[in-house]
Amino acid sequence: MSNVRGRRVEFDDIDENDLVISEPKTAAAGLKAGEVAFERGLRQGGASRTVRSMFRVN
Image 1 (cartoon, one colour):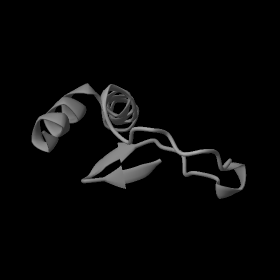
Image 2 (cartoon, helix red, strand yellow):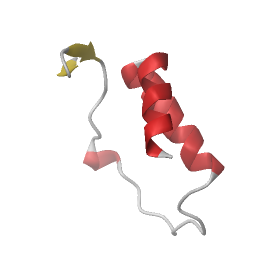
Image 3 (cartoon, one colour):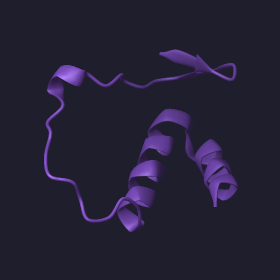
Image 4 (cartoon, one colour):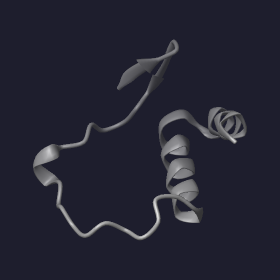
């Protein structure tokens, strides 16, 4: 658990030993990027904070 703006949120750090290098994707953004960002936001900050953040980004 960690504190973000006074709220306790749960997230896991990335273990760099588990990283696998592969060929680059053909696109860096798009629907999949939005899906992953929304999923991570829900997991780490909850629905309300995620929706507010997404409206601020785009």
